[in-house]
Length: 419
Image (cartoon, rainbow, N blue to C red; front, side, top):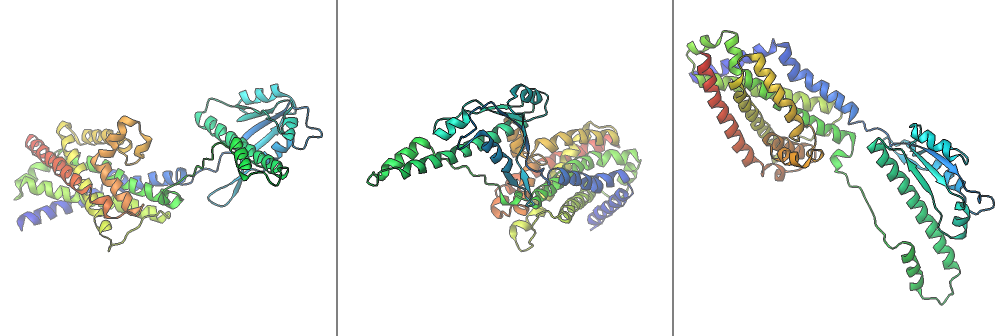
């Protein structure tokens, strides 16, 4: 009982001390709110579809009297729209006509005033109207790889669909003149000549992240992981050094408590504050409409606090290892931050693992805290069940025992050195 009372007393003392530390409260409470706010405004509010500024040049002198002309293509481009998530319709092409002045259009393209230039060569309208192949020249602005690839993809898709529609009209026209006794396979063969391949490409987005609510849920859980990572390392790294600088370490050791009581009490208070920063992240995300499910009757959901607690113990243990090379609380905190910031991006916690280079992807996949946060995300955001948690539990338990065990040994060394 004496040991339990001592542990609780130390934990209570640390909690009260943290409540008076404005910098600690900033990292535990204010920082998650600030980072989530920026992330929600930037990433959870996707920009509208790109509207391309396209210059159109008519070198074609056969438009007059043609059934279908280059100007008809331009009119179609002006009508192409995409619908945003909010239901708003956005024009895909902002068309600027240059008459037959190709040089002026390309000059504006080089100056960055246009995203692309479409040139209809001489004979375009006549060839289209007569059933021959019509040629189009497309110039795309380089320099910005993302916008360049987007412009190429949009224009290529536009002219492909236009070509398919024109092919269908030609096939129907030919079919009207086929003899009534012509074998049905003749038309199918002709369609095969026009469309040798019929590929359908569909985009399937996980339901949870297809909406703003899903994206915000993803980031809210990620922020909880960042809090456990950054604050856990810092709390563990400063456990002993901070008491030594306050000149309270010797008095604590002179009291009827063991070194392990001190470690247990500080670990308990550390886990409590990691729980606070996690709850702040989740509640703030919910306030923004994040999709985060919680059902106390769901066994997978009940394991989420266990998984997060193991993640917290791992980071506290790593922080204790950091304290072995730090001589001051400021140095320990700075070293923990210097280690934590890269890990935040390289472990799949804040940055999705698939965005990382191949060599780093494996590190992100198997980093223990990254595994824990990904399991929590699968359960709370993606709606997974025990199949997302149970496979990683043995690994997390093993890494928790390893990291915290090594941290406890490091704590013993640092404590002996500090007395």
